[in-house]
Every structure is written in structure tokens, then in C-alpha cells.
Image (cartoon, rainbow, N blue to C red; front, side):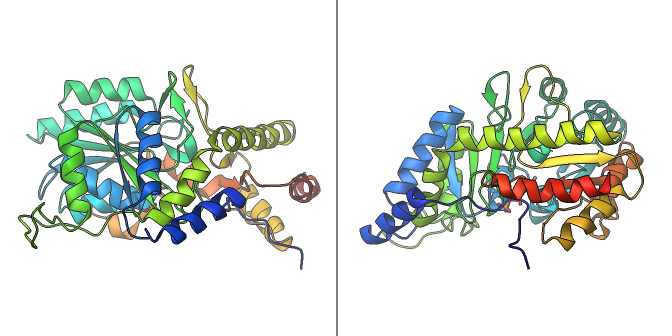
Amino acid sequence: MKTKIYLSPPNIDRTEISNVVSAMESGWISPFGSFTNDFTAVLSEYFKKKTLLTNSGTSAIHLALRVLGIKEGDYVLCSNFTFAASVFPVLYQKAIPILVGSEQDTWNLSPDYLEEAVSSLRKKGIAPKALVLAHIYGMPACLERIIKICEENEILLIEDSAETLGSHHDNIPLGSWGRAGVMSFNGNKIVTCSTGGAVILPDEETLNHAKKLSVQAKEPVDYYLHNEVGYNFAQSNILAAIGLAQFGKLKEKTEKRRQIFDRYLSFFEEKTEIWTQKEGEKDFSNRWLSTFCFAEKSLNVKIKEALEKENIESRFLWNPMHAQPVFKTVEFFGDKSLDMNLFENGLCLPSGDNLRNEDLERIYEVLEKIF
Ligand SMILES: Cc1ncc(COP(=O)(O)O)c(C=O)c1O
């Protein structure tokens, strides 16, 4: 059996290993230590905002909702075409999610359907409190229009930028446009800590609140005092040691992923009718995953199966939230057929920034045989 080519595996070298050894040798293996401080500092500088490291992207979304005051019974608009972890934290807060469908160009939440959702809810006397906007597969959503709608309707924007480190709009990183932003550093992300995340916050007050909540809401006194419910959401110094080393290579990683995407794109454009995520004028995507939607029915399944036979991983695109049994009672605004078409006819191809030339040759050998 040939060695497996994964979709988006971690890319670890001596820098990460030596940082982890140094964290272990320092004895600081809890959520405190120099790597936690340094990784927080570089992220805060990058986003030009307050940043708190967390143990996952999911916990970062949960913390963002909590510190922005989202509570039981509040309505929260959410992207429909995303990973379920975008929406689950809304339920952890006992708030009510409302799903908004995608647009053709970016595959992200459509500002038109957002407008429709807001005005329809308003007619029923409902004023949604927040929007969890996912920028999918690295591609910026239509930010300026979405921000305008949020501002006009006093909706707090939380950017789920879990997949987008390295992406920007108008040269400003995704994750720093909203009232809060969220990153994931799980094992398949462009920058990984093995597992981990970060929440990007607007001011000292929300940062301090999030910090306290992330360590079981222990009040700053010399005995155990808890005035509110907290969580165990902090990130350890060992994970921050990995993240810091990874972050230093973000530019090269982004360039490599964009090159991988461009090559797939030119290949498919010559062979068949495809549809992919388009970058807007001021947008820049890290192309975290190379994603394509095929006009020919079942071509995605055919490619997936052919790759699988050669021990190469690929993956279907998100199965939209409106189609998930767990969200079957949740209200939806948009065009279900558009989101379903992405799921039914799309595919993510191997996109890791450690793909070697010989790996790419193996992938293209399979693809050439199909067309
Ligand atoms: C869009 C999106 N939101 C949220 C998450 C959750 O991040 P994590 O796996 O770090 O909890 C992920 C990644 O898994 C994601 O892709």
C-alpha cells in the first residue's frame, strides 16, 4: 500500500519540536508560561486587537457569545453552509439559532438572504442580537455589506474565522472585522497547536471577562470564589509553543496552499465545468482547502473513489446545517438548493502545505485517468 496522502495534515518540523521541549523543560505546562504570553502577543499584534488563547475554536465561539451577552432566548443568525461547531455554541447558551443560506460567489452567507431574514424577523417583532458569520475554507464573506446590515440593525457580528488565518479583506485580517472573531488551531488547520483556538475581542473589559470565564470564573482573590458559571477553556503553554512556531511560517504556508489551489483550478478548467469560491476585489483567501463543485453529476464521487483506491484522502463539502437532523426545527432563510448543490456535487482535495511534488504527481495521475 502506498503511503497515505491526507487532506490537510499538520506540517511539523524542528522548530515546533524544540519549542515543545523548551516548554516541558521550563516546567510551565499549564495554561501559563512564556509561550502562552508570546503567542498571545504575536496574535494581538497581527489582529491589532485583544486576543485570548483557548483550548479550541468551539470554546472560543462559546466565550465570544458569553462575553457579548448572548443568553437564553436571544436570536442568533448563523451561516448555514459551515461546520456544525459554528452553531452548537449558540445552543450551549440556550439561544435560538436562525440559519442563513449562501451566495453563489463566495459560498459564504449571502447578504441578500441576511437582509431577508432580518426584515422577516422584525415583522414578527424579533430583533436578532448577533450573527455568527463563517468564512468558509479560507474565503472572505461579503464583509462590507454584511457589516452594514449588522450596524443598521444593531446585530453583533462574531466572525467564525476558524479556517482563515492568513486571509484578509482590504489588507485587514479576517477575525478582526467583527465585534469578536474566532480562530481554530485544530490538527487540520493552516496553523495548528494540535488542538486549540483563540478569541479576538474589542476591549480590555471583554478580554478580562473572557479570561476569567476560561479558568472556571475564579475571582481574583486568594481563596476559591465564583460569582458566575465558568469553563475550563484555557490553552496550555505546550500547545502555545507549537502554535507560535507554526505562526512564524504562515506566509509560506499560505503561498503554498494558494499554489496548490491554482494548479487544481487550471487542470479542472481545461477538463470540465466547475464552480469554485471567487475572491472579491479586496479579498485574499488562504485557500485553506482547495474546493471545487462539479457540474457533472456524481463526478465528485467518482474522483473521491478513484483517489481513495490510491490511498489519497479527499472529502465532501459541508452538509449544510438546514439538512442536519439536530437542527431540523431551526428556521432557515435562503435557497436550500444552492447549499445542497455544494454538498452533493463538491469536493475538497488534498491541500496540505507539506504536499511534496511526488504527492501532487500521484494525485494528478489519478485525475488524468478520469478525464
Ligand atoms: C468553520 C469552523 N467553525 C468552528 C470550528 C471549530 O473549531 P475547533 O475544532 O478548534 O473546535 C471549525 C473547525 O473545526 C470550523 O471549521
